[in-house]
Length: 54
Image (cartoon, rainbow, N blue to C red; front, side, top):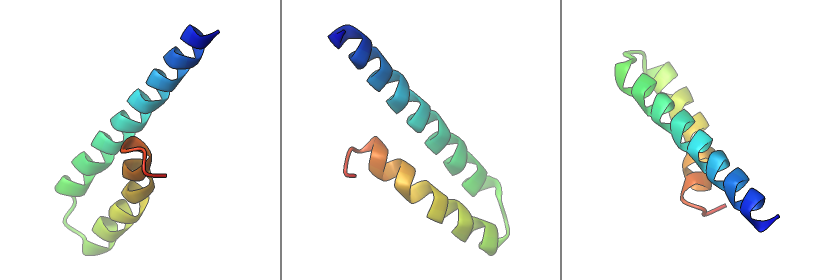
């Protein structure tokens, strides 16, 4: 059971990392400052979860 929990946790953090990378990729490609602010607001919870701060 512990192995399954570890696998699910690793998959969860891999998914969070993938979404974070995609958000940063889109953030660097956008030119509109309103979209940049929106990307940063959405990215903050993902980064906090990825770095295990919240």
